Length: 392
Image 1 (cartoon, rainbow, N blue to C red):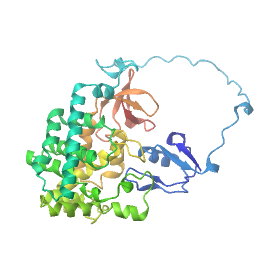
Image 2: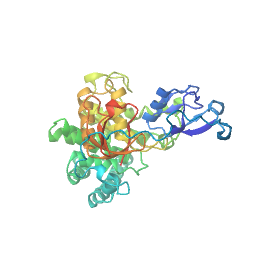
Image 3: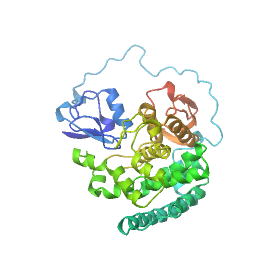
Protein backbone atom coordinates (compact mmCIF):
# COMPACT_ATOMS: atom_id res chain seq x y z
CA UNK A 1 0.00 0.00 0.00
CA UNK A 2 1.02 3.62 -0.37
CA UNK A 3 0.21 6.82 1.50
CA UNK A 4 -1.31 9.59 -0.60
CA UNK A 5 -2.33 13.16 0.11
CA UNK A 6 -6.10 13.63 -0.03
CA UNK A 7 -5.56 16.05 -2.91
CA UNK A 8 -3.96 13.26 -5.01
CA UNK A 9 -6.88 10.87 -4.73
CA UNK A 10 -8.78 9.90 -7.87
CA UNK A 11 -11.89 7.75 -8.40
CA UNK A 12 -11.18 4.05 -8.64
CA UNK A 13 -8.47 3.91 -5.96
CA UNK A 14 -9.00 1.27 -3.26
CA UNK A 15 -8.54 2.13 0.41
CA UNK A 16 -5.91 0.00 2.15
CA UNK A 17 -6.87 1.26 5.62
CA UNK A 18 -10.02 2.61 7.28
CA UNK A 19 -10.47 6.40 7.06
CA UNK A 20 -11.35 8.03 10.41
CA UNK A 21 -13.19 11.24 11.26
CA UNK A 22 -12.38 13.78 14.00
CA UNK A 23 -13.71 11.41 16.70
CA UNK A 24 -11.74 8.50 15.22
CA UNK A 25 -14.87 6.76 14.03
CA UNK A 26 -14.71 5.03 10.66
CA UNK A 27 -16.20 7.09 7.83
CA UNK A 28 -14.94 4.80 5.06
CA UNK A 29 -13.82 1.20 5.43
CA UNK A 30 -10.76 -0.56 4.12
CA UNK A 31 -11.40 -1.99 0.65
CA UNK A 32 -13.76 0.80 -0.42
CA UNK A 33 -13.41 1.93 -4.04
CA UNK A 34 -13.25 5.72 -4.11
CA UNK A 35 -15.67 7.87 -6.07
CA UNK A 36 -15.86 11.65 -6.45
CA UNK A 37 -18.48 11.76 -3.70
CA UNK A 38 -16.39 9.66 -1.31
CA UNK A 39 -13.28 11.74 -1.98
CA UNK A 40 -15.30 14.85 -1.14
CA UNK A 41 -16.40 13.20 2.11
CA UNK A 42 -12.76 12.51 3.02
CA UNK A 43 -11.81 16.14 2.30
CA UNK A 44 -14.84 17.42 4.21
CA UNK A 45 -13.68 15.60 7.34
CA UNK A 46 -10.25 17.24 7.22
CA UNK A 47 -8.31 14.04 6.53
CA UNK A 48 -4.88 14.98 5.20
CA UNK A 49 -3.78 11.62 3.77
CA UNK A 50 -4.98 8.04 3.34
CA UNK A 51 -3.49 4.65 2.49
CA UNK A 52 -4.49 3.06 -0.81
CA UNK A 53 -3.70 -0.27 -2.45
CA UNK A 54 -0.61 -0.04 -4.65
CA UNK A 55 -2.19 -1.65 -7.69
CA UNK A 56 -5.27 0.60 -7.57
CA UNK A 57 -3.39 3.80 -8.39
CA UNK A 58 -3.69 4.65 -12.10
CA UNK A 59 -0.42 4.67 -13.97
CA UNK A 60 0.82 8.06 -15.09
CA UNK A 61 1.19 8.31 -18.86
CA UNK A 62 4.64 8.58 -20.37
CA UNK A 63 4.63 12.10 -21.77
CA UNK A 64 7.21 11.15 -24.40
CA UNK A 65 4.89 8.49 -25.81
CA UNK A 66 1.92 10.81 -26.33
CA UNK A 67 0.98 11.55 -29.91
CA UNK A 68 1.03 15.27 -30.74
CA UNK A 69 -2.44 16.75 -30.89
CA UNK A 70 -3.63 18.29 -34.13
CA UNK A 71 -4.44 21.94 -33.74
CA UNK A 72 -8.19 22.46 -34.15
CA UNK A 73 -9.55 24.99 -36.55
CA UNK A 74 -9.31 28.48 -35.10
CA UNK A 75 -6.44 27.50 -32.81
CA UNK A 76 -4.90 30.48 -31.08
CA UNK A 77 -5.76 33.01 -28.41
CA UNK A 78 -9.47 33.22 -27.70
CA UNK A 79 -11.14 36.49 -28.58
CA UNK A 80 -11.51 38.79 -25.58
CA UNK A 81 -15.08 38.97 -24.34
CA UNK A 82 -16.30 42.29 -23.01
CA UNK A 83 -15.61 42.76 -19.30
CA UNK A 84 -18.60 42.13 -17.08
CA UNK A 85 -20.02 45.17 -15.39
CA UNK A 86 -19.32 44.41 -11.74
CA UNK A 87 -19.09 46.92 -8.92
CA UNK A 88 -15.63 47.86 -7.61
CA UNK A 89 -14.48 46.24 -4.36
CA UNK A 90 -15.67 47.99 -1.21
CA UNK A 91 -13.09 50.16 0.58
CA UNK A 92 -10.76 48.16 2.78
CA UNK A 93 -11.69 44.85 1.17
CA UNK A 94 -9.25 42.02 0.61
CA UNK A 95 -9.28 42.71 -3.13
CA UNK A 96 -7.34 45.92 -2.56
CA UNK A 97 -4.40 44.10 -1.03
CA UNK A 98 -1.59 42.25 -2.71
CA UNK A 99 -0.96 38.64 -1.57
CA UNK A 100 2.27 39.76 0.10
CA UNK A 101 0.31 41.64 2.79
CA UNK A 102 -0.09 39.92 6.17
CA UNK A 103 -3.16 37.72 6.37
CA UNK A 104 -6.01 38.41 8.77
CA UNK A 105 -4.78 35.64 11.08
CA UNK A 106 -1.23 36.99 11.00
CA UNK A 107 -2.47 40.44 11.92
CA UNK A 108 -4.46 39.01 14.84
CA UNK A 109 -1.54 36.93 16.13
CA UNK A 110 0.79 39.92 15.96
CA UNK A 111 -1.62 42.21 17.84
CA UNK A 112 -1.06 43.13 21.47
CA UNK A 113 -4.66 42.14 22.19
CA UNK A 114 -3.97 38.56 21.08
CA UNK A 115 -0.67 38.38 22.98
CA UNK A 116 -2.41 39.52 26.17
CA UNK A 117 -5.26 37.04 25.60
CA UNK A 118 -2.85 34.16 25.01
CA UNK A 119 -0.85 34.99 28.13
CA UNK A 120 -4.00 35.01 30.25
CA UNK A 121 -5.22 31.82 28.55
CA UNK A 122 -1.95 29.97 29.24
CA UNK A 123 -2.00 30.98 32.90
CA UNK A 124 -5.68 30.09 33.26
CA UNK A 125 -5.15 26.67 31.66
CA UNK A 126 -2.21 25.85 33.94
CA UNK A 127 -4.22 26.88 37.00
CA UNK A 128 -7.18 24.82 35.77
CA UNK A 129 -4.94 21.78 35.32
CA UNK A 130 -3.63 22.20 38.88
CA UNK A 131 -7.17 22.58 40.30
CA UNK A 132 -8.47 19.44 38.61
CA UNK A 133 -5.51 17.29 39.60
CA UNK A 134 -5.74 18.55 43.18
CA UNK A 135 -9.44 17.74 43.24
CA UNK A 136 -8.91 14.19 42.00
CA UNK A 137 -5.72 13.30 43.86
CA UNK A 138 -6.34 15.04 47.18
CA UNK A 139 -10.15 15.06 47.29
CA UNK A 140 -10.00 18.86 47.42
CA UNK A 141 -13.25 20.74 46.91
CA UNK A 142 -13.53 23.11 43.98
CA UNK A 143 -15.34 26.42 44.17
CA UNK A 144 -17.23 26.83 40.87
CA UNK A 145 -17.02 30.62 41.19
CA UNK A 146 -13.23 30.42 41.47
CA UNK A 147 -13.08 27.93 38.60
CA UNK A 148 -14.72 30.29 36.10
CA UNK A 149 -13.00 33.48 37.28
CA UNK A 150 -10.15 33.14 34.78
CA UNK A 151 -12.27 32.31 31.69
CA UNK A 152 -14.63 35.19 32.59
CA UNK A 153 -11.59 37.46 32.51
CA UNK A 154 -10.81 36.10 29.03
CA UNK A 155 -14.34 36.94 27.90
CA UNK A 156 -13.90 40.44 29.29
CA UNK A 157 -10.54 40.81 27.55
CA UNK A 158 -11.90 39.72 24.16
CA UNK A 159 -14.77 42.20 24.39
CA UNK A 160 -17.23 40.34 22.13
CA UNK A 161 -18.26 36.91 20.90
CA UNK A 162 -16.65 37.55 17.52
CA UNK A 163 -13.35 38.49 19.13
CA UNK A 164 -13.46 35.40 21.32
CA UNK A 165 -13.80 33.19 18.23
CA UNK A 166 -10.94 35.07 16.57
CA UNK A 167 -8.71 34.46 19.58
CA UNK A 168 -9.59 30.76 19.85
CA UNK A 169 -9.26 30.16 16.10
CA UNK A 170 -5.75 31.62 16.05
CA UNK A 171 -4.52 29.76 19.12
CA UNK A 172 -4.11 26.24 17.76
CA UNK A 173 -0.68 25.13 19.00
CA UNK A 174 -1.89 23.09 21.96
CA UNK A 175 -1.21 19.36 22.16
CA UNK A 176 -3.24 18.94 25.35
CA UNK A 177 -6.50 17.15 24.65
CA UNK A 178 -8.23 17.89 27.97
CA UNK A 179 -7.31 21.16 29.67
CA UNK A 180 -6.96 23.62 26.77
CA UNK A 181 -9.86 21.94 24.96
CA UNK A 182 -12.08 22.27 28.03
CA UNK A 183 -11.10 25.92 28.47
CA UNK A 184 -12.05 26.62 24.85
CA UNK A 185 -15.37 24.77 25.20
CA UNK A 186 -16.11 26.85 28.30
CA UNK A 187 -15.52 30.07 26.33
CA UNK A 188 -17.61 28.85 23.38
CA UNK A 189 -20.41 27.83 25.75
CA UNK A 190 -20.52 31.29 27.32
CA UNK A 191 -20.61 33.02 23.93
CA UNK A 192 -23.24 30.58 22.59
CA UNK A 193 -25.43 31.10 25.66
CA UNK A 194 -25.17 34.85 25.06
CA UNK A 195 -26.28 34.39 21.44
CA UNK A 196 -29.27 32.40 22.71
CA UNK A 197 -30.23 35.22 25.08
CA UNK A 198 -29.59 33.30 28.30
CA UNK A 199 -29.21 35.33 31.48
CA UNK A 200 -25.83 35.84 33.16
CA UNK A 201 -26.37 33.06 35.71
CA UNK A 202 -27.05 30.53 32.92
CA UNK A 203 -24.10 31.81 30.87
CA UNK A 204 -21.79 31.27 33.82
CA UNK A 205 -23.30 27.83 34.44
CA UNK A 206 -22.71 26.99 30.74
CA UNK A 207 -19.09 28.07 31.20
CA UNK A 208 -18.63 25.86 34.28
CA UNK A 209 -20.23 22.93 32.45
CA UNK A 210 -17.81 23.41 29.55
CA UNK A 211 -14.80 23.46 31.84
CA UNK A 212 -15.73 20.21 33.58
CA UNK A 213 -17.44 18.28 30.77
CA UNK A 214 -14.35 16.18 29.93
CA UNK A 215 -13.01 15.61 33.45
CA UNK A 216 -13.66 11.88 32.97
CA UNK A 217 -10.86 11.77 30.39
CA UNK A 218 -8.39 12.11 33.26
CA UNK A 219 -9.30 8.47 34.00
CA UNK A 220 -8.52 7.40 30.41
CA UNK A 221 -5.05 6.29 29.35
CA UNK A 222 -3.01 9.08 27.75
CA UNK A 223 -1.85 6.56 25.13
CA UNK A 224 -5.46 6.06 24.03
CA UNK A 225 -6.25 9.79 23.97
CA UNK A 226 -3.24 10.53 21.77
CA UNK A 227 -3.21 7.39 19.63
CA UNK A 228 -2.70 8.52 16.01
CA UNK A 229 -4.54 5.59 14.44
CA UNK A 230 -7.88 3.87 14.79
CA UNK A 231 -8.90 2.76 18.27
CA UNK A 232 -9.48 -0.96 18.63
CA UNK A 233 -12.87 -2.08 20.09
CA UNK A 234 -11.49 -2.33 23.65
CA UNK A 235 -9.88 1.11 23.47
CA UNK A 236 -12.99 2.68 21.98
CA UNK A 237 -15.19 1.11 24.64
CA UNK A 238 -12.84 2.49 27.27
CA UNK A 239 -12.93 6.05 25.92
CA UNK A 240 -16.73 5.90 25.68
CA UNK A 241 -16.82 5.45 29.44
CA UNK A 242 -15.31 8.87 30.16
CA UNK A 243 -18.75 10.49 30.62
CA UNK A 244 -19.51 7.94 33.35
CA UNK A 245 -16.10 8.50 34.94
CA UNK A 246 -16.68 12.25 34.91
CA UNK A 247 -20.15 11.97 36.42
CA UNK A 248 -18.83 9.82 39.26
CA UNK A 249 -15.92 12.20 40.02
CA UNK A 250 -18.16 15.26 40.09
CA UNK A 251 -20.97 13.59 42.06
CA UNK A 252 -18.54 12.84 44.87
CA UNK A 253 -17.75 16.59 45.02
CA UNK A 254 -21.41 17.62 45.23
CA UNK A 255 -21.40 19.80 42.10
CA UNK A 256 -24.54 21.36 40.62
CA UNK A 257 -26.86 18.92 38.86
CA UNK A 258 -26.36 20.66 35.47
CA UNK A 259 -22.58 20.17 35.73
CA UNK A 260 -23.06 16.50 36.58
CA UNK A 261 -25.50 16.03 33.71
CA UNK A 262 -23.22 17.76 31.22
CA UNK A 263 -20.30 15.50 32.11
CA UNK A 264 -22.60 12.50 31.67
CA UNK A 265 -24.59 13.64 28.61
CA UNK A 266 -22.33 15.73 26.36
CA UNK A 267 -21.97 12.80 23.93
CA UNK A 268 -25.71 12.11 23.83
CA UNK A 269 -27.41 13.18 20.61
CA UNK A 270 -30.85 14.67 20.02
CA UNK A 271 -31.85 11.75 17.77
CA UNK A 272 -30.82 9.16 20.36
CA UNK A 273 -27.65 8.08 18.52
CA UNK A 274 -25.17 9.14 21.23
CA UNK A 275 -23.69 7.50 24.31
CA UNK A 276 -23.53 6.30 27.08
CA UNK A 277 -27.31 6.22 27.75
CA UNK A 278 -28.79 6.81 24.26
CA UNK A 279 -30.90 9.69 25.58
CA UNK A 280 -32.80 11.84 23.10
CA UNK A 281 -34.52 15.20 22.75
CA UNK A 282 -35.41 17.23 25.82
CA UNK A 283 -34.39 14.39 28.14
CA UNK A 284 -30.83 15.65 27.60
CA UNK A 285 -29.95 18.52 29.96
CA UNK A 286 -30.00 21.85 28.10
CA UNK A 287 -26.43 22.62 29.20
CA UNK A 288 -25.30 19.26 27.84
CA UNK A 289 -27.06 19.97 24.53
CA UNK A 290 -25.21 23.28 24.28
CA UNK A 291 -21.87 21.74 25.30
CA UNK A 292 -22.22 18.98 22.70
CA UNK A 293 -22.12 21.61 19.92
CA UNK A 294 -19.20 23.58 21.39
CA UNK A 295 -17.31 20.33 22.05
CA UNK A 296 -17.63 19.08 18.46
CA UNK A 297 -16.88 22.48 16.91
CA UNK A 298 -13.77 22.98 19.05
CA UNK A 299 -12.52 19.44 18.40
CA UNK A 300 -12.94 19.72 14.63
CA UNK A 301 -11.32 23.15 14.28
CA UNK A 302 -8.28 22.10 16.33
CA UNK A 303 -5.41 19.96 15.06
CA UNK A 304 -5.07 16.42 16.37
CA UNK A 305 -2.31 13.85 16.05
CA UNK A 306 -4.43 11.91 13.54
CA UNK A 307 -5.60 14.82 11.33
CA UNK A 308 -5.25 18.51 10.62
CA UNK A 309 -7.65 21.25 11.76
CA UNK A 310 -10.78 21.96 9.76
CA UNK A 311 -11.73 25.37 8.43
CA UNK A 312 -14.81 26.71 10.32
CA UNK A 313 -16.82 26.70 7.08
CA UNK A 314 -15.97 23.01 6.57
CA UNK A 315 -17.25 22.36 10.09
CA UNK A 316 -20.43 24.32 9.36
CA UNK A 317 -20.87 22.15 6.26
CA UNK A 318 -20.52 18.96 8.31
CA UNK A 319 -23.16 20.21 10.75
CA UNK A 320 -25.43 21.07 7.82
CA UNK A 321 -24.96 17.64 6.26
CA UNK A 322 -25.14 15.54 9.41
CA UNK A 323 -25.89 17.66 12.45
CA UNK A 324 -29.41 19.06 12.34
CA UNK A 325 -30.93 15.78 13.52
CA UNK A 326 -28.22 15.12 16.08
CA UNK A 327 -28.30 18.47 17.87
CA UNK A 328 -30.94 20.78 19.31
CA UNK A 329 -32.08 22.68 16.19
CA UNK A 330 -32.44 26.05 17.93
CA UNK A 331 -29.02 25.79 19.52
CA UNK A 332 -27.13 24.58 16.47
CA UNK A 333 -28.73 27.03 14.02
CA UNK A 334 -28.05 29.97 16.35
CA UNK A 335 -24.48 28.76 16.83
CA UNK A 336 -23.70 28.23 13.15
CA UNK A 337 -25.26 31.46 11.92
CA UNK A 338 -23.29 33.48 14.46
CA UNK A 339 -20.07 31.59 13.76
CA UNK A 340 -20.49 32.31 10.05
CA UNK A 341 -21.22 35.98 10.75
CA UNK A 342 -18.01 36.15 12.79
CA UNK A 343 -15.97 35.58 9.63
CA UNK A 344 -17.78 37.98 7.29
CA UNK A 345 -15.14 40.42 5.92
CA UNK A 346 -12.49 37.78 6.59
CA UNK A 347 -10.02 36.76 3.88
CA UNK A 348 -10.14 33.12 2.83
CA UNK A 349 -8.65 30.70 0.32
CA UNK A 350 -10.96 28.90 -2.08
CA UNK A 351 -10.58 25.27 -3.10
CA UNK A 352 -9.09 26.35 -6.45
CA UNK A 353 -6.32 28.29 -4.68
CA UNK A 354 -7.68 31.79 -5.20
CA UNK A 355 -7.84 34.28 -2.36
CA UNK A 356 -11.20 35.91 -1.66
CA UNK A 357 -13.10 37.85 0.96
CA UNK A 358 -16.27 36.60 2.63
CA UNK A 359 -18.95 39.19 1.88
CA UNK A 360 -22.34 37.80 2.88
CA UNK A 361 -23.85 34.61 4.31
CA UNK A 362 -26.51 32.55 2.55
CA UNK A 363 -29.15 31.75 5.18
CA UNK A 364 -30.19 28.62 3.25
CA UNK A 365 -26.62 27.28 3.26
CA UNK A 366 -24.38 28.96 5.82
CA UNK A 367 -21.32 27.04 4.69
CA UNK A 368 -21.53 28.56 1.19
CA UNK A 369 -21.44 32.36 1.48
CA UNK A 370 -20.99 35.01 -1.20
CA UNK A 371 -17.31 35.88 -1.61
CA UNK A 372 -15.43 38.57 -3.51
CA UNK A 373 -12.48 37.45 -5.60
CA UNK A 374 -10.74 40.41 -7.22
CA UNK A 375 -13.54 42.38 -8.87
CA UNK A 376 -15.87 39.37 -9.13
CA UNK A 377 -18.56 38.34 -6.66
CA UNK A 378 -19.04 34.57 -6.37
CA UNK A 379 -22.11 32.99 -4.79
CA UNK A 380 -20.80 29.62 -3.59
CA UNK A 381 -24.34 28.24 -3.57
CA UNK A 382 -24.26 28.58 -7.36
CA UNK A 383 -20.78 27.04 -7.63
CA UNK A 384 -20.77 23.61 -5.93
CA UNK A 385 -17.33 22.94 -7.40
CA UNK A 386 -15.87 25.63 -5.12
CA UNK A 387 -15.61 25.81 -1.34
CA UNK A 388 -13.73 27.72 1.34
CA UNK A 389 -10.62 25.71 2.20
CA UNK A 390 -9.19 27.92 4.92
CA UNK A 391 -9.36 31.32 6.53
CA UNK A 392 -6.42 33.65 5.96
